[in-house]
Image 1 (cartoon, helix red, strand yellow):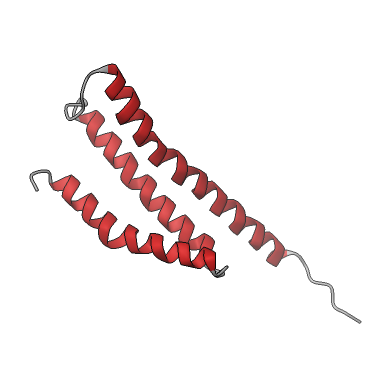
Image 2 (image 1 turned 45 degrees about the horizontal axis):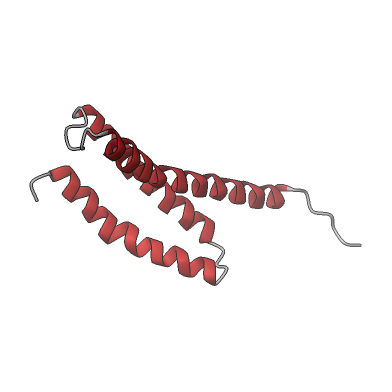
Length: 113
């Protein structure tokens, strides 16, 4: 409760990204047409939060992290870095899928005789 940024980010995570994650999961199970749009929104939101997390910690001089190398590189950078890698890959996949679908729609259609 003492760090306003953390409270704000975790509130967004709980009330927005949590339900959106469930909705995205269900959309993929049902092959819903909006599944890649939902994946894109969710991944972008997660990346944004992660970048803010790392940026605020870096600007604070890493004062909230344990300076021991194993903890810093293994936990803070390594494990938290997965929260950048996975949404980044899913964001790239969403962009690819949406661009491929749009290319198919943009192709000229041949009229049947």
